[in-house]
Each structure stands twice: as C-alpha cells, then as structure tokens.
Image (cartoon, rainbow, N blue to C red; front, top):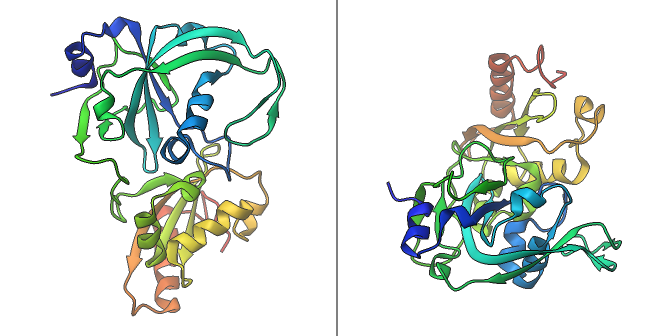
Length: 276
C-alpha cells in the first residue's frame, strides 16, 4: 500500500523532520473553512497557517510541515510542504485571516513558513486516509505513514459521496462544493442530527423546495431550526447525515410517516431530542 511516507522517502525528506498538519477549524461558524480559504484565498491560508496557538510549540517543532486540509465529509487532501521556524508571539495587532477581527499583540505564536517545491505536483490532487484521530491535527511524519486513497489528474471539487454515505458537520454547509449543494437541494427525505456534546440524536424531515440543503441551512443560521428541544440548549455543531430519501412523487404525508418510523427505530423521543 502506497503511503504519504513513501512519497517523503522518494523526495529524500527525512520523515522524522516532518510534522503532519490537518487544518479543519470549526470555531468560525459562518466564515471560511481552512479548505475554502486554501481553495479561494491562498495568501490568507498562508497567514492562517502561520498563526498558531500557544501550547503547541513542541508538537510543531520540525523543519518541515506537511500541510493538509479537511474537506466536507471528513476527506483529507494534501496542499503542500512548508519550511517552518518559530518566530515567537506576534509583536503587533493583526487581522485574523478568517474572521477579519483584530487579534491583539501576543495572542498567537507566529511561524515563518515558506512553500517548498518538493511534492508540489500533488497539491490539491492527493487524498490520504487521516484515520479516526481528527482531533490530533498535528502528528509525526515518522510515526504516521498515512495511506494514499486517491490521486486525481486535476485539482477539482471532491465528488459527492452519495446520500447514504454523506456524513458532515453543519458548520461545513457554507463550504460544500456546488455539485453537493445541487444534489442536496434537489432531494427530500429524513435526516439525523447528532449533538457532539451530549451524543443525543434528532430525527428531522426535509420537505421544502430546497430539500436537505434548505433545511440544514436553517439550522446553520439559527442553531435550532425552530425545534423546541434544540432551542432549549446552547447551539452545537451537529453532525448530520441522511437516513432516507424519497422520490419526487412523495407527499408530505409520506415524509411524515417515514419520519415517525425513524423516530421509533432510533428511539429519538425517549433517548434523544425529538419531542413529538
């Protein structure tokens, strides 16, 4: 099995000198994700990567960073190798590259990073399997070889995974590819929200003209989509997936029947967030 570690070997780069960084930041709901920042605003992505929180200095201490971004659906693509050295706490107020807010001096560590030519032909085309440890966004290159799952001919949008395979966070709604948006807005059915904090589930129905996408955008905008149980708690970045799709001929009554079945199957009234 070919791994990213094998590519480092072929490029004569010592794996022990490499830190693997997977950027997927869900703190900035309503703004760019690291993926769309890299895709649409490369200079701002470079700035974002150079600003790192205090406490990660030992983990980031390596002459080379292999930079990856998480895409909707938990995919991971390679975006480049960078030389890296710690400058120290930022010396002056600085605009945050995602939010535009002014970060006061001393809020972040700054790193001097420079894109390296090695492996650059794979940037945006190489997809790896990061594994289950998404929270471990900094990993050692000599301990995590990372299997390569795909190498594409051209840089482009990730393909829609299909309705049954789709798993994503609500915070990713604003950054999904246009082909995903078209597929989700054209289809109605039953979906599942899962709260990452309480592990409770909510079964819902997408019956409007904009299908799943329209309904999920309501949650994204309000945090609760008008639901009583969700209003009673702090907003959360729910995981969302599709339980069932229906054809164009299905009536609202058909959807309501399907929703009731799924609530019973998952016991989301007794042990979840549904109240009816």
